[in-house]
Length: 549
Ligand code: FAD
Image (cartoon, rainbow, N blue to C red; front, side, top):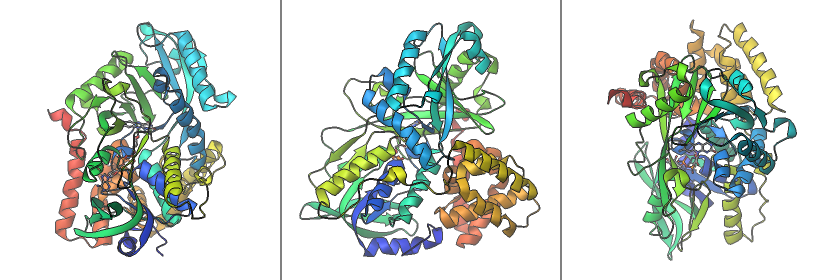
């Protein structure tokens, strides 16, 4: 039994994967795989999960980071989808109130494009109704003057009114890792950096997978009664290997976000506005930045190398300048960016943005269960459907619990409600001041780690560095290595702390310190250290590569 999700326990985890026989093996450590692992392990199944890179390396760290009902799906008349994901918002908020935060969204109404005032008013009413939004949070329609008061940066000659409606924002990669940690606590055997290369069959039915530990470059077999393919954009690759890519297939569409210093686009709250071509775009303030996205274009390139292109950046900059003319943004103002792939189900004759976001399950004659499509927001219900299917078809004789993930709080989420989160932030800010650390980290720490921030505050004293922010970074690194399976600087800077996107300056200031600590913790040779340095600087360059073209 391995009881801590620590990088130092990885050899023991790999040994369990090689020796045990599992009920269910999940391929893919994005939000979909994580959700399935938690649901299945909490019901009583013996679960394993393998991820080829870091957890949330794929789409689950590259979304708009909203737990949202999907207003645009209402336009596409997908009432079922709006109802399911709309209702899930409040559930996921309760599971992690520090990580899934209520966010009022401003929807400005333009004279020249988009829906009219009354259609929007009725549409948002239906949206609130389908999602069961509490009366105090239901949509409020705004006059032109009220809308401009909410956001003075908006183009004044074009606004005829607006609306405020309820959504939630999150950090997708943190949500994924917290679910992974919970699944591990329920006994799931989970590892990152373990690539599934092929399937193993017994009498024509899948009986396991052949994987490669990419850290040591060694291959081994994992035995399992059922195998689920939750590899998002890579789903069809594994279906192809299983010779079961028949009928429906994936249609990948790329979505790009750009990050600007908040002072360059000082929006006062999250805004959802129309681009000139009718696409809806979000501008979301987060700490010292505002991020804006997304594009939606068909993608057929390398799935492990999805980049923001000059035309993506130009499209978003143009949309910003039309909507917020005084901002005067140029491509040079962009500080960071990310690009992700939507693993959607292909529909003949439909364009990228018309494709449904609904999830679907494919079962192959050899027993491979693949799940594709869907949303970050709907991960829990998607998992429930997969695990229901697995338990009915394979484990009907086993006394399994019914799905109860609705009641499984994530780590650090011991809060009653959003007000409790704010009170906790205040106490953390006070404690930071006493430790001579800038209190502006309070909000960041609580939104990232919730009540696990107590561990960080208690352990900062391990590092007497005169630069107290440096001591904080080192403590965060200790926490994420020992409790969140961080193996590389990119795991830490991209998917545990989001610094590559949201605080590049802090990353650049402390990357050498972090690399040094990694080398000490993992006894890296200079060759490994140099490789890791190169990977980090490549990632820093790639998110701004479009500037040099
Ligand atoms: P992924 O996160 O891609 O996970 C699949 C994992 O499988 C990857 O980590 C990959 O490394 C691993 N893998 C692949 N092949 C193998 C292999 N052979 N062996 C082992 N592991 C393997 N949804 C929302 O609800 N809200 C939003 O705001 C939102 N915004 C979005 C914005 C954009 C631009 C995009 C692209 C999507 C957005 N979505 C949003 C949708 C949401 O992000 C995705 O539906 C979700 O993240 C998909 O998760 P996943 O686990 O299925 O795939």
